[in-house]
Structure formats: C-alpha cells, structure tokens
Amino acid sequence: MSEMIKILVDDVARKTELNLNTINSLRKVKTRCYMAYHVMLIPTLGCPSKCSYCWSSEEGSPVMSIETIKEVVKWLKNFRSEPVTFTFHGGEPLLAGADFYRKALPLLAEGLSHLKPAFALQTNLWKITPELAQILAEYNIPIGSSLDGPQELTDLQRGKGYYEKTMRGYEIAKASGLKVSFICTFTSYSVKFREDIFNFFLENGLNLKLHPALPSLRSEDPGKWALDPEEYGELLVYLLDKYLENMSRIELMNIDHLCKCVFTNRGTVCTFVDCMGDTFAVGPDGSIYPCYRFVGMPDYVMGNVHDHPNMEDLAQSPAWKLMFQFKEYVDQNCGECNYIKFCRGGCPYNAIAPTEGEVKGVDPHCTAYKRIFKEITERWEKEFLGGSGMPMFGFPSEPARDARPGVMAIMLKRL
View 1 (cartoon, rainbow, N blue to C red):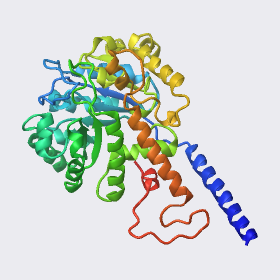
View 2: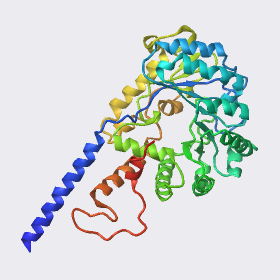
View 3: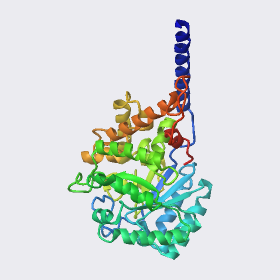
View 4: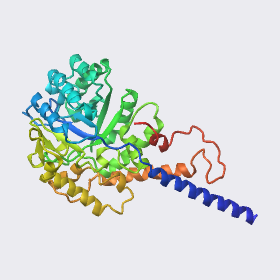
C-alpha cells in the first residue's frame, strides 16, 4: 500500500510540474497581439450631448479643415514605416459633416497607402445620415458608440433624449452594414445596477465595452462620478462570470483583452502598454498630443502637423517627457508586481488626472487591475491543473454537468 501511495504522489508531482511549465511556456509565446501605431484624429471637441461626467467636450470648438488632413498625410509619409490605424474621435467627430469624410478618407487611404491605414470612429451617432453612413461603409469603418444601459439610466447620466437619438443613429448605421459596438460608462451611481445593465446589452444583442467613469483634468469636481477602484475590480469579476455564462450571445471586449493580456504576458490595449511614442492625437488645429484625452489642453501640445515634426522633435516637448516620466515611475515602483508585464501601471492620463498633471503614482485603478488579473490567472492555472470535468493530477473525476467555458476559451478567441 505504501508503494502505491508513493507512486501516486510522484505522479501528482510530475504532472503538476509539467502543467506549471506549460503555463509558463505559453506566457512566453510571442504573438502579434499588440497595439498598432495609432493616430487619433479629433475633427472637433464640440458635441451636441451633455454627458454628466464628460471630460472631452468643449463648446465653441473649431472644426478640422481638409487642409489639416493634407498636412497629416505629409507629416506621416516618412514619420514611421509601420502600418497605422486612424481613429476619428471627439467631441463628436460627425459634426465635421459628410463632405469632410468624403474628402478626408481617400486622402488618408491613398496618400498613406504604403502604411496600410485602417480606420475606426467613435460617435454618439446623433449626426449620422444615410449619406454619411455609406461613406463610412465604403472603408468598412467599425463604429464605437455609447450607451450606459436602459433608456432611463442612459438619459439620467447622458442627458434627456440621448438614448432615443443614439438608437435612431444605430439603425441608420446598421442599414448600411456598419458594425457598431457600444461603450458603457459605469459610474459611482450606475454600478449599483450592473445586472440590469448587463441584461440590457445581452437581451438587445449589443456588444459591450465598459469604461469606468474617470476623474477629469477639466472638471471643478473631478471625482463626482468616478467609479471607486475596488468597486471596479468587483465589477470586472462579475462581468467575467456573466460573460462565461453567455459567450455565445454577447461580446464583452474588456474581458477579451484582459484574458489576452494574461495569456500573452503583455498588454493588448493602450491602457496596459507603454503607449508613449506609439499613440498620438491630432486636434482640430493640427496640434499633436500624446493621446486624445489631452486634446485642447495647451500644456500637453507636443508639436503641430503643419510643421511635420519627426520623433526627435516631439521628444523635446514637456508633454512627451512627462509621459516617459510615468514609464520610469512604473519601472521603479512596480518591479515586484506579478502583473507589471501586462499592466505597465495602467493609463498615464488616469494617473496624472487626480494630481494636477504630476506623476505621483500609477493609474488609480491599479486595485481593480490587480483584482481581475489575479482572478483570471488563478482560474487559468486551475484549469491547467485540473478543474471541473478534468482529471486532477491523474486522478479521475466525474464529468461536469452543465459545464461552462473557462477563461482559456476567452484567451483562445480570435480578436
């Protein structure tokens, strides 16, 4: 009997070591799942909606001219050699009008064809028309829009009538074959209704990406709507569970990317990578910023497209240096964190917004990121070492009834 126990113990040890080695090997796999070279074009900071927690709208903002688009083409022609993705953002980018996009899209697509440009657009859809939808469809542009859940909740946070106007635009976009996904902003108020919100998106067949409401560098009361990091972490775990129960019915983009981060051991979206030098935003007047969140704020201007600056020119700006100061802070203060390779301290904007533009810490959502990364990691390792319906260290187990997919199913999804 003692010999049999010894054989079983040795078998447990051997298979445990093999599975842990497999996990570590998979984490070292190099993939092409990394952030593209990204230029955000902000045609205007103007916006017809009045969302309570907005930090990116500015009344009286000018609208980008086609001449500025031509200068963008000249600037980027020899700026970098990698493929580029353009995202039209705002404010509300559709305020620029159909004629702007009719001219801008071919200028960018043909003038920078050697960079294989891809396009995306973030809009509340209020200003979309069949004509404009058809222009965007010619370039197969994916649309991101915003709803905070059911009509009553959306209108409470984003203004009366918001829901109806956005859904009207959604129908126009769909009729032209455009793919539309929605960002849902969870606030300190709406997080109480997380089940209602998830069920709304599920039952209406809408894909979901969530944003936590952020403090704003522009607001006199930056924390009013901000979502507490611990609540955000629990929200992410809740949504992971709901996603695993409903993977065939909904796409939850945050959870997809968080699982990919753990699987590849590197960030897969801008929040979780060193975005400095790989992300730029161009404001209505051609000013260049580190990210669209800084557009319209003079202290964060790095240059202007009309001057066709190279990387060395941009690197001389205080804003560039501030972004790299954040990177250095993360390297110095997060070195012992288990998740540093696929978190990188979170978003620099989130980090400096509460400290009046100074680097004094990492993204305040660090607590949330650690919570969800730990949850995903532990579930993944458990699946490898034997979970429900799987042999545990060589010992047979009963087949699971009503087994649902595990996090590995999300990790292996093609994004």
